[in-house]
Image 1 (spheres, rainbow, N blue to C red):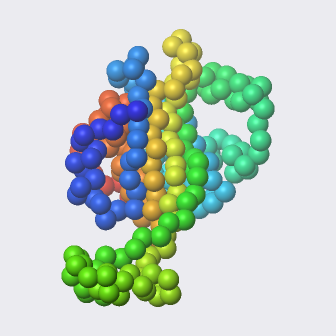
Image 2 (image 1 turned 60 degrees about the vertical axis):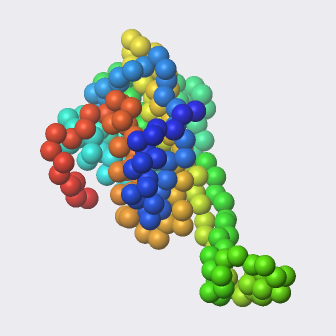
Length: 218
């Protein structure tokens, strides 16, 4: 697994955001990949979030001259919540290929974690303690004062870009692990996630950058 230096630098400027790239991998046999027609799949039971996410990515791909289709446009909403057999998925892949698709972008939540973050300098004491009583007085509130710490939730997600090319095989091209920390709005989280995802894909030469950096409205 390899982290991009440019991503780390970027995150220094957006560390107030709730979406972070944790790790990523790119198929070493593929230097450049261009989607010509891509299926965008967001696996979540939250239909509102899925619709906003898929629509946002669809618009971004289309702005780059790529034909993009939301899974919600192609399948029933229950598609991602119903179990599929390997044979059924093989049939779906064949149908996609026969209809001109050459790639699939698949995003899903792979874990949820509750966290506690202790607040720094809670009571205004100096950070260095030379006496036991001072150190104890600062941290005794940890057991009973709810203002001493913040509780939040992290959603661990994974986005994968697959080639379903008829002549080049059907292989994993790129995979990224992104964490969403305590999301407060679907729209804000989708915007942050998609913007970071696109930045990484552009860096990895897996999507063309916009010629004109215009904001795409939902």
